[in-house]
Length: 100
Ligand SMILES: [Cu+2]
Image 1 (cartoon, rainbow, N blue to C red):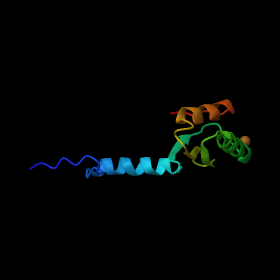
Image 2: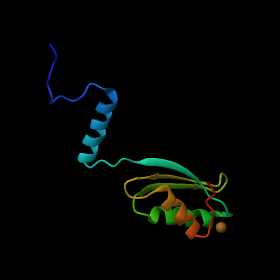
Image 3: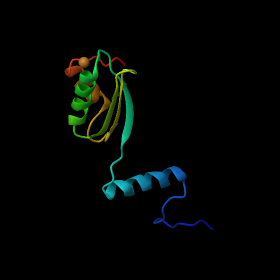
């Protein structure tokens, strides 16, 4: 005989994960994404502070770490509030290049 229960959380692990994420979102937890963006044109610590500043000024950005040596910015952000394209746009608006 087939079970016809309808109110149970699915046993499928992917669906169980989706339910968990939805539960976290409903509790107010932010889902953060981390990305490494290339930044060209930086030559000193002032440039690093500049890029760090414009990234952190965007709402949705929680963390921005810029490396002059590596020419990259590592950003932790909330994808519901800001996109990678907007992060790159802010870097370019500050006078630097963000090659893909
Ligand atoms: Cu500089």
